[in-house]
Image (cartoon, rainbow, N blue to C red):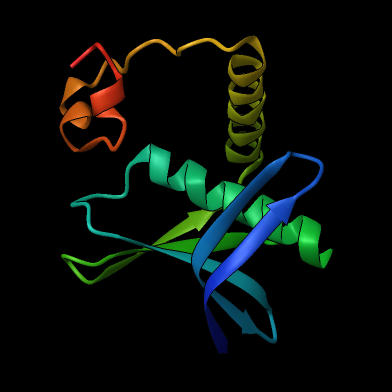
Length: 128
């Protein structure tokens, strides 16, 4: 298919923007691809990729059924099916983010403290 890199995406409905590492356009549809340096394809990566798909769907009017996480260390391509459960989890997370932003609240710290080590916001958080 035709490969496009660093594709900006936006959703007026979700009030969300992003940039997809790669979008592949083939005769069978569009496929977002996100490149990761992580060792495994965590659930949070799947949520992010699903969010990209929702934004692409709104922009193009096409239904996107699946995308890919490319695990750069292992050179493994992981297929992510955009199920109703994943789509719903993304919509719920976005609603939570908007509620937190509108109420000017600080979200609870993660239960997975090892994530704090590499977090770009750790200098602003009193939990580390």
